[in-house]
Image (cartoon, rainbow, N blue to C red):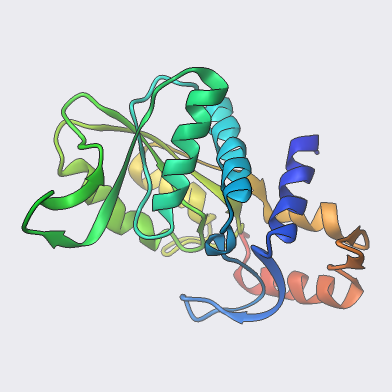
Length: 225
């Protein structure tokens, strides 16, 4: 496993973003792990997070795109932090854009905040995690409604490696198949387990034998076949 991936996994743990225990997800599934990008709260954390995202996006999609779209709400700070990091790391000015949950009818009107999206723009979508692919169903039509826009790809921080909404493929694979653009993650849950299983992190072993069995059982039920 690449060193930056190990560093990112430990970074998620240090920031209390990646947790282990028992959690009920939005989908109703009971999961032995949970990721909450809302726990990145300091300037130093967001700066570092933006750099991880920028490197992963550059690795997978290069810099031939114009807009980084972060779906409301968690995608908003992700898109801002990553456009800043992209400028600093690669000298490329990418515009950030996000959607509002409600259309604004005064002042800066419309459903978008940040940069407007216009004909000819190439867009990369940025999210924290995709469990079932449902969020893309909401995001895709918003972006495409702005004009003749090309979506280059999606980048998330963690690939949970679970089945999507309508097939036995992973949510990211399902998105790629359905929408025709790339879908990638900084790290996969398989890499998280590989990195943390029976290894100390923050002074304790986070994935011991018992938790490993819970994770294995979870993937037996919900994982990609």
